[in-house]
Amino acid sequence: MSTHEEALRALVRASPWLMTALRAARSLELPPWCIGAGVLRNLVWDALHGHTEPSPLADLDLVFFDEQNTSPARDAALQARLQQALPGIPWEVTNQAGVHHWFESVFGHAVGPLASLEDAVASWPEYATAVGVRLEADEGLTVIAPLGLDDLFGMVVRRNPRRVSIQTYRQRVAQKRYAQRWPDVTVIPAEPSQQICG
Image (cartoon, rainbow, N blue to C red):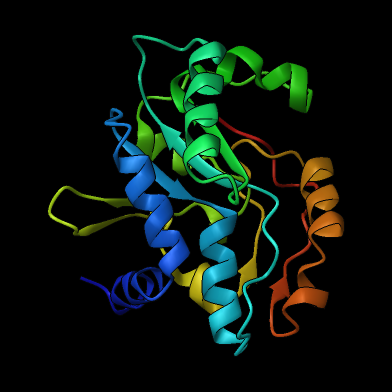
């Protein structure tokens, strides 16, 4: 077990609201699932910057992988259940097995189907946010970090070229205001030579 994994687990356990969210997600009894992306980035970078108040969160990403039912209505119903149970949390529930059906209409380029939950997490926009955690039945925390945790704990924003276009990455960097929110973060500019693959 890596030191970064241990540190991430400790930070998650020290966050009462995130643990509550993980328990709510676990209660849905979904196929392979995790909570991740921006919530974990904020958690770690806030801690590394000594912030005592959590940074605002646009949404809390709960993702799962189920090829048997990729209906958007199911995602919406699950999200509604969680919003009713924990209305103070900005839930966003997505079955990653169905992302290829709508990705082009939202992001402007088509992508192929994902193979698993880990494959999905590995496609997320930046290396630092390609991370998820799952609360197991025995209260253990499983860390899903197919691209590693170095960028997350090194406070590096780097485009993941697998699915994110340079234009989308630049928009995200401008919108997220990483440097203003976390001054010690290093943002690596997207290079035109980095093509989307996969």
